[in-house]
Image (cartoon, rainbow, N blue to C red; front, side):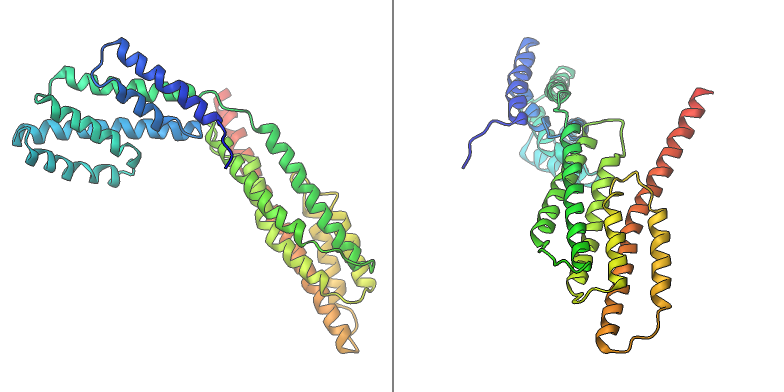
Length: 333
């Protein structure tokens, strides 16, 4: 097992002593609780850290209000404590702020142990939450820039797509076909990793709610299943013909338009023409010719489905850009 100190571990190691020191500096009771809160709030992304901090705050607030009501009615007794937790726990679950359950419980226990809920006791609890959460959020402002990594992964994925398409075209041209299984399996893993990384990039920006690179990797994920079907169909073509050569040329053309900004309109028009030509060919005179044409026709349909995935993403991006430009023009007035 490899021992390593990651970026998040390093930030946690900084956040905990700073939070505890600040809590000690202003003479807070149970100052180590600030360190515990810091540990919970140092998350892999900025948004998750903020969500944790807010969940903890609202759970602490709910716990304090309930403690004021229930402990004043039933006293600082075991019965009162049991009733307090009976009514407290459903609140974080109902409002989906489960991240703060434990710290809210710590606040409740601190109020219970105090034996008398005063303003100072409440202030102490919320100062601990503010210092622990604030320190963690400060640490999470420093995140590694992964834009360059995402760009490199995008290029690597496009190169692999290009490799697969060239092998398919080579087979349809009658030059043999190397197995694409290893490349396709590698693509599956690489796209998953890239998509996860792109999501982390979104989560590290408070004001950004969409990301074109994330949408791009999502598109490639959808296209990959279709690409596998195209590869299987191409492998089932046993002989090459004038029609298979035409499809091979079309597929080679696709390798030059893999970039997500390239329009699919021309390629889809070419596919429509090719499909119409296939359908207007004279009826096959043998079983082999019939199977050959049927396979090629199915191949054209899969290629069209492949392009439709890209077209859908482009339409979404165009709509987002239109919305953004409209918002900017309204603001400038």
